Length: 319
Image 1 (spheres, rainbow, N blue to C red):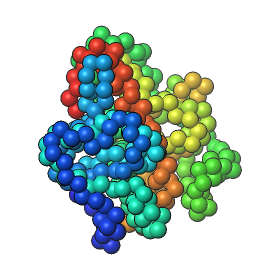
Image 2: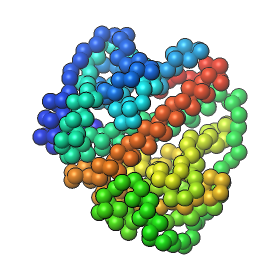
Image 3: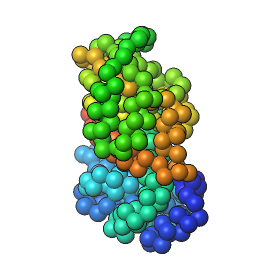
Image 4: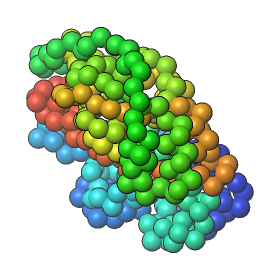
């Protein structure tokens, strides 16, 4: 499976020893919305739908097949299940039981780094697909409110921070001294006025960013609907990482929210170095990134379901 291709043989054997194979007939609910269970699942065979109940029936958030993960969000943030996972065919699943897998990750940092890198890649791919889905959603719901057009992109110009301010930000995230020094010295500061665009949807991605001060609005332009806010990010929140994972263009726009913002740009080659899965990567940073992407994906799923309800159940449910 592509998501596990970066595992070394020994790491793969260790993970397999903690895993449990399970078979399910069609139309079986594997996970139920609100459940407190925290296991993650890999689909070996079959089709699984992730659904949410609405006043207009079940709304399909995702259709997943061979090689896909589900349930990893709860594994990461320990929150209750945000939807049902239902098999649509005979399905063979590989469960990663929370207790046994967490014990393995605590014992072997290499397996931990490899698995969290897998979680990060899986969640980022889901977030990109969900972002892309918005265009199809609004294309078929023209009666929804139209937002104002986004601001033009403007150069940020020269700006320098006291190095202690950058160090304090990374120290707050409980990174190692080596990681703090690495990110402090190699990140570049950017100061944005209120409404100023850092990058547009469709731009190439060459850096990941972290908010140092102020707030950053992540939004997407929807034909016929204008700009739709996806997330508002505060101090310590990372963004822009998806384009570094898959090499695709930016899937959304980032601009300073009211009052402006100061962000640190971490070049793509720096991110690649500090998160190199073939070394013992920065596990604390990987966990931070997984947590943030999980939070954004949950929020965006909530937003899509809310729009579906506002549209009277008329918007398309295809994924």
